[in-house]
Image (cartoon, rainbow, N blue to C red; front, side, top):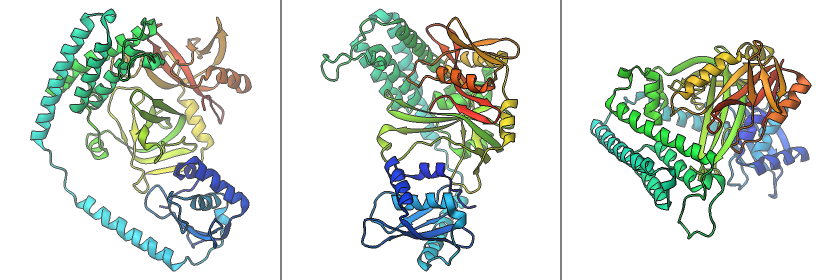
Length: 501
């Protein structure tokens, strides 16, 4: 199957924003010459004027068997694809149907044949490979290390809590960081991340409350813990204690015996014990779906200065069963100059095979292998897609019950995204409120987490288009001990109004 070229996909393939802008400039200037394609339209080629004495030969091959085209250019650029190649992609996306059909140069045909032979050679060992052996000795050793680490963490938490929040000091922060390193050494990276976040809450770094007069490398407790800070610290300590208690049960294999679903038990292996699921493992365990259609409700990027990771999350609604899942891409900061997070998806996704991660969460993670031919197809949205979105909008009562059920587990996120059928929006006591058909109401507030505010955008959208189906993030406010809604997008008819850029 040939790669589908759209302006959105080209923006994802471009190595950086400057290359994309330069490519558009080349297109406007008419730098591309003698453009042509082969008889099936999977190979396009031509010349592009550049800084050299003669035009560069540029080509693209769409029959790669992956989710990306092969772009070639004779220019000396070290970026891939270069601006000349991106310009060719843009020209093909806009006017590829008008390219004349010509016999491709022999060197391009030879390169395509070599690439196909190489891909076939790489597939054979993978197909013939036997299931990897399980090193039981290594697993037992790892389990012992994790058990010891959890015992140490339990003792540490008891000592930390016994002194109260007033007893926290710079030494407490050092001890928390030491525990984080211990968890990381035991391959419990998520728990290590929670401890790192706890140290940040105690020191006030998450509020930008560091004291510049302190000696370099020395961290101390923030002056005067505020209510919000105390609430975050208390909740994080609860998470850590739950991690210890459930982590020990997971190592002993007692989760399912105590009534926990197998799906949730498997999810704990990831969230507590640091298991990194591979797609074949998820398929074998039954966490697999086929022939699904997804439409993206909202797309967000967040930069976590504490863990030094950038994350892009796309919230997708399953057009068949109405569940809202999430597509997650996460990269450490130091890799961002060389690669990019996934962009928003503007079409409807048709997925042949995908993993649906275990867990009793509202928004389970979905993942597929885009390198496998035929797994994903993105097509333009249709009226029937928007009808499905509206059909899956729910009243507030079941939405709030699902949210409260998720909050029962301290290891679950304090937020989840839903589709709500909104009858009307209005202001009550100065706050924006959504009301459903039954008259039930939910207060809408912007999350105080650095994201762009969206309630004002919803006011304008609702005034212009009226009520519709609202994609909203419900979140639990630790300080007020209440659930609020953070609006993400409004669907009215076949209009998709994203409320946050």
